[in-house]
Image (spheres, helix red, strand yellow):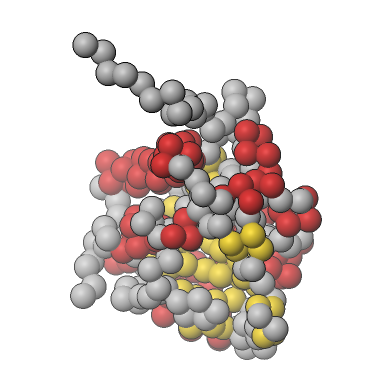
Length: 274
């Protein structure tokens, strides 16, 4: 006997249309650096089927939808370092790729006091469609790139690029750049030293304005910390990288600061920090 289908169960169509971009893209895939860049919040695009999640165009241009300038910085840095990069193609409002699936904010009903109508009361099937359409392909793309490094006998460096707002909750954030890390000091500690040595008035945040010790740093935790490869998450203030010119300036700064660190062959080892 065939199971009886509940007529109230409406099939969920594929999240992305045939003419829409894939969940993520890989740039400079054959870059020669032993380094993978990732950008979880590179885009503010919403799948057409979700009708902008009920939000106006102005809301989608704000930080709640994506990390302003992060894509530009990642692309410039990829070229400077000759490193491949995996970039998300859709907004974190649809599904936040830097959160675990158990985190309530992975599909936020409210983001920074903005109600997201299209995220209210999602069914299990609707949530699963977003995971299947966007979340899982992004994770697989990163895993695939890391697997390629391992096949070549490499334990690559892993750098996540984000950006933060100049002001939050009425507080003017003084940092130009934040270096987020938890237990592994191999990249973050010398990176902060190199940046401070430039003596150009930079305010460098050590786990500011966010902390790498917080569980809302899932991409690093899942793909890098868990596997013991050297890693860091870099946050740049948005007004410094929201133009191509600004992104190029900061890509140059980061290239100079990372060059000596990445040139050390002893960096590329698997270490588990307790």
